[in-house]
View: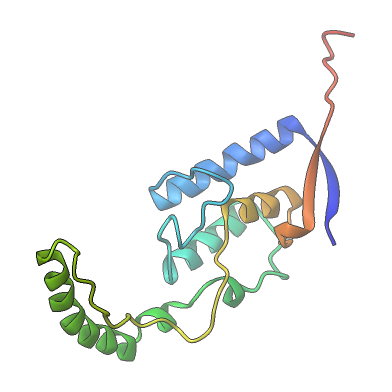
Length: 159
């Protein structure tokens, strides 16, 4: 069930810029929209996203007891263990020659290639919007459950 919450524009704007600057500083990449994904767009996987989240929670003093890391991300061990590395080495020894043939034919010949290792379970990743909601709320909340409605701010100089 979606909850509608009222928020001042200035507070939301401050939160937006604070989290956007944090993500861009930590990732070295541009955050282009609220849907920018930590792994998918910023390329922070394994320990990189883990340490990003630890720093995020500590820097902004956020509650994290309801956050389940495993729901959103693969661990370093899942991505880069020795079995996965060996599998990917074998796959690349087949994939690379097949891709070379495709390129030599200017992609007119499409060849089915083996896929690289992916962990068995699925994860959802996290977006800039997820972190923004977490920051505004002060605790982790699934962002799909909150919709912000801007409050009208009175201009004190006008009165």
